[in-house]
Image (cartoon, rainbow, N blue to C red; front, side, top):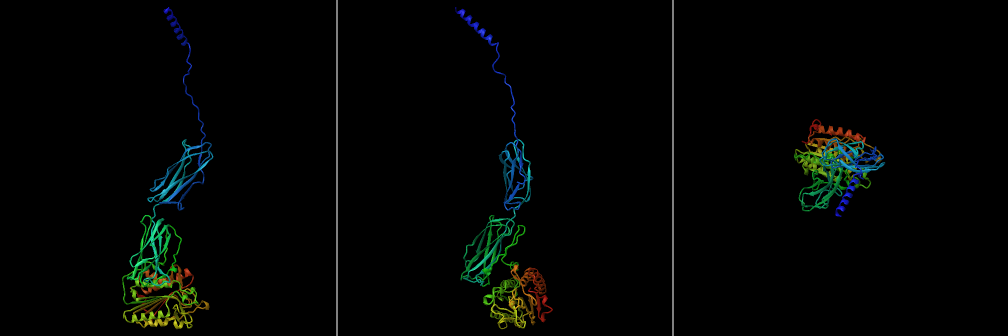
Length: 563
């Protein structure tokens, strides 16, 4: 029985195996196939006219420490989106100190859309001067890049600023002298005379004496100064009763952010020195360019850098008069009759006498807005001093109004004298010359920046009468030379730009240029030529200086010299 069952099972196994060998598998052989991807391309273009280079000061040039931006508009005018975009910036040659992004991720731009792209550019202190050519391309992963475009601009290396203390003037209210216990003010101007912007500019004022009190804070914040820009300030102080010195020094120091391009200047004021009125402080403005800086001065060029010489001639004496303010002495006169800059003329000439021409300070008398009595007394003292010195030399300088009397005799006009009392209280040139000649001085020199035709100095004292008078030419004796600012009926004019009379300006200019080493012949020739030319050019009026000399020195005066 068991054998039968085993045989039956073996039979069915055989039949199953045999049947399986007659059928194929239900799984097909693996095969590869390709499905094509359709690409709709973008088209990238730079929008025409959108390219723009903009620097901070809008001069089209990148300067050291300056920032700029390069902007343009990229458009996708194709039918497909632009993705994975980059702005790639290349430079023709590397320039030290120039910084910009060479690669900028832009993302994507849909068809028909545009985007403004800005590439920042900056420059450091070590920037080189050169010509830059940047090439900008917007790239796309499939190579469908925009056409490159170029931008050209110049770079300029660091131009140093220079914060100069340009000028300073001491003043008091009312124009009185610098005295103890009287408030005095230093008005100053600092200016960036360099070629780049200066930032964080400060000005510090210090006084080099413990017996002087500061009435203002000494530190001034000037901020940022572009080339040519200036900052003006004023600093008040007062000398104590214990102040013993003859002179005070005030120091002005400037600094800027690098602490490299500042400067220091000292200003000196002498005790009892006549000062300007603070109300007359004027700072001239001008248009400036980076390539040429015009300094902003409170004073004329002849009042700065006055030549200094230690040479002293103890035999020299001088009287210097500047009569400017006539209106305050007479209610009938308006301010128009005042003689503009006459006090400046006198003060400057006095400075040349003591700094350049060998005159001792105590032997020079300076009178401002002098009365008849003051002038007469000063002339008398001058003559007495000269008589006591066998080697004496005298100089008299006058800036102010002159006036003729009815007989055409010329007079200097004190501030307290009018046409009514001219003969009685005016200073007759004839009498003044006679008095000076009586001193027997070896040299007598008179400088007159005034006219005597009735025109005043640049103003018409006799304008109401509508007349001009040709004054007499006074003769004189002794060893005398008179330099007169004008001739005949001419007016003596004011050179407003230089803040002096024409005559005085060119007198000082020649002394400055020669450091006082000029003979009278050369001085006369220079003054006559310059005044005649400049008065016509600037004022369209003729002013002709001339020289009158005494017979004693007719053949020798041209060789006279202050040396």
